[in-house]
Length: 426
Image (cartoon, rainbow, N blue to C red; front, side, top):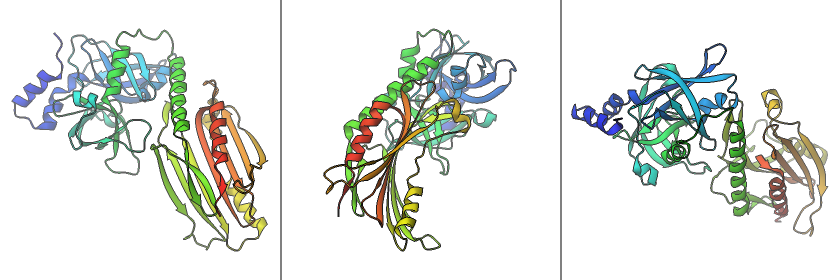
């Protein structure tokens, strides 16, 4: 009969081992390093971690760990190396693109495996609980990292657990467990520029993928069609939510402009007031950005949603010099060139003057609309909308709406709603 974690944890605990040692002592038979290899050369191109979740060899890892094999199975293949010394092939069964998870099968039978923490599945895990993250960082060998559960990350569309622990490359896809060895989350990312700020995918998403994919057959070809369908469905739900929550009005100098009501945006302000040499035009800006990106491939992360406003006022510039400043502020920003050409069609832009009536409320606008399509994701576009007020020679508001991976009709509706809320407040 296959063993889950409880028996091994109890045996280690009976020996008087402290928390981290107890967890790690029982972990090796259930931990995997997952390697992506060039099929022809047989050499690894990347490594990650994974963990067994059933006695017959089902395992969870991150989608980004196996994405090359998912999208290009003729070029890449997967294999595993167990912390207990076992090795073998990995078969990809199913993916959960929005939550960066994958379900795979390895050639293990009657194997010990990890169970999920019920409190984590129910969303009742208390903040401050000690967790232990397991994985193989930088191909240095299996490691255990102690950290703290801090609940879900705020201002994020995707549910991620804030884990106070030092995750490193190669630990992606490994489990984060409680003192009883039960899975609370899956290692996924760390915050660059911060210390001990890491993120886990909540266990409930891994449990749902296991339930959905338990009877899945190995993919006859690649999983590209499934990835495309999941991206379109997820982005459709995101933009539906954004549209339903709508905009609220904020005052910027002499103007009133829209900001989103969605709680999953984080907003920051900046100014050039302290610049040296002394600026000849004051520029005060706000930027609200959604944490809603999704990993598709090693050279494609998409999902940025951004609302920016810059209030500019001349200090000692004439109207022509001030117009030059506005032109620089109003450049549309779409990802182009380099490796992105394989994903995107060429950018197309249209510029026009829009006079919204009544003029007493809405200033005349110079509007730029730029869009580029995705070559493989039919019906999805990246869109940049930029509006510059044209009612004064010495002050203006430059407003920007950036939308990635959106259906074109959804972009038109959001753009129209955005422009309608640009008003004069003086």
